[in-house]
Length: 184
Image (cartoon, one colour):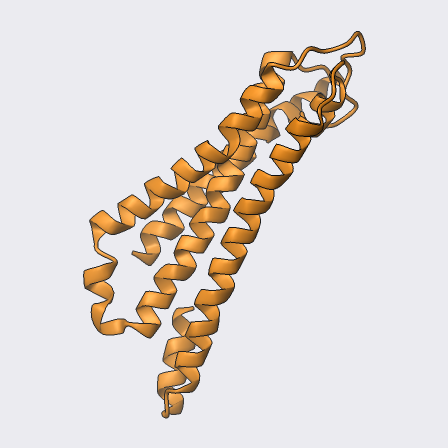
């Protein structure tokens, strides 16, 4: 299961890079720093979708290590192929759900005359700042969604590794501790 999660993590990393890097390279080579509205929204959406999915997947991976070290006899039963697939799909679904509403709200904003963003890639906050209306709700929702993904993943990871460290310190043999730490 660990390699399945690592494979998915590496795919997410490649996709995150691919969502921004081509436009950055074009900007660098041509000097043209313009981006269409649709391309900007698309770039932002995929960047945040993939980033959110990655944070959730990292939390899932810490749960995998928790089960492997704290419940080794039940590991193969708990972390079977179907469950691992569900966890990966769940991380993608969480990324989708976390980014779809803020993206829809940004798309629905009216924009003023100034439509130039001075950034090397399209940033949603810079896009929101171009709007003619009060965007505090969109900004608050984006902040709360980002915070929930980041803090939720961080808390799950910290709790998992706290249990892992506590379990490892209960192992009496030095070789057993080394083996347990090496799997993390």
